[in-house]
Image 1 (cartoon, rainbow, N blue to C red):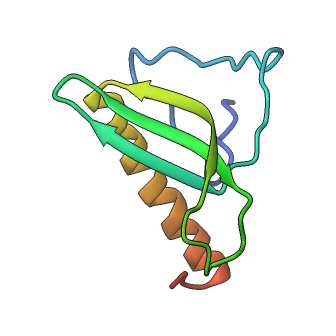
Image 2 (image 1 turned 180 degrees about the vertical axis):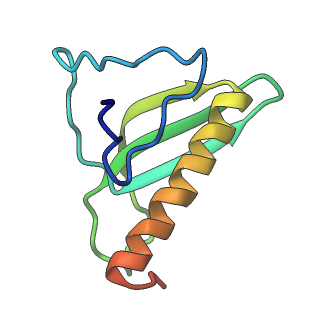
Length: 97
């Protein structure tokens, strides 16, 4: 008898390969700032850290550490993924304002 899929598990889509994540070279970095720009061909995300907590400062310097360049199609998929993730977060912990 075939084993029933676990509750909450999604059935595999036809012709979709199984993804195996290789995390050996993965590095984690904390960022509290993101800036985005785009052209017709790409979307650019710059990530960094704002270490200046003085709101009265006339100028704030932000150390940009990472730049991710995406195709518009990948950026759209990222947008959809983040919207779903934040909806789940707010359902669990309350709305962010």
